[in-house]
Image (cartoon, rainbow, N blue to C red; front, side, top):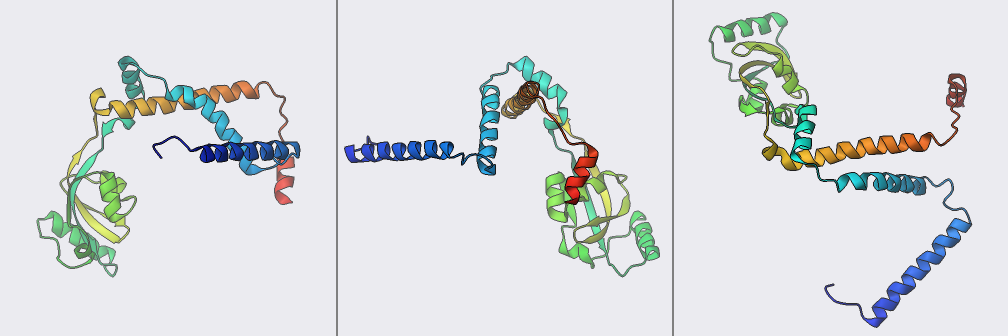
Length: 225
C-alpha cells in the first residue's frame, strides 16, 4: 500500500499471527499433520527448495557455460526449418490413383486445385516444428524430415487427412553463440545443477535409513486387493 500500517492495522497483523501460531501448534499436538497428503507434499517441496535454492543463486563463468552448451547441444541451437508445398489427397482415392498423381506431380504437372489442400496453407517457407505441427497437427514435421528434398513424396498424414508433399529445402539446426543464448544457458545450467544436487542429497538421506521394500509377490497381492 506504499505506506506504513496504522496502529490498528499493525495490531490486526499481530493478532492474525498469534491466531495462526496457536492453531498450528495445537494441530501439531493433535497430530493433524500425520497422514495428510497436502502437508506431506508441501514438506517435500520445501526440502527440494532448500537444495535447489543454492543452485539458483550460483553464477557460472563463461567456461562453465560453454562446457554446458557442448554437453547439451540440442538445447542451444536454432531449430531445423523446412520449406515445402503440399496437396491434399481425397479419402476416396485408391492407392493406384495416389501413385498416378504422385507420378504426374514429379513429371511437372501442377497440383490439383481441389481437395483438402484448399483448407490449408499450400506452401510454408522455412517453418520450424512448432509452426508446422501447429498448422497441420503433431507429427507432421517428423514425417517431412524423412522425405527426399526436391521430389514429391508421401503420402504423409496430418490432423486434416493425407497429403502428398514436396520438400523444397531443409535447413539443418545450427549451434548458437554463447552471447545469443547466455540467459537461457544460465537458467538451464542452474536447473541441471539443482537436479544433480537434489539427487545427491536424496541419496545421502536415503543412505541414513534402513529401508524395506515389498517383493514382487507382495506387490501383486496388494494390487489384487
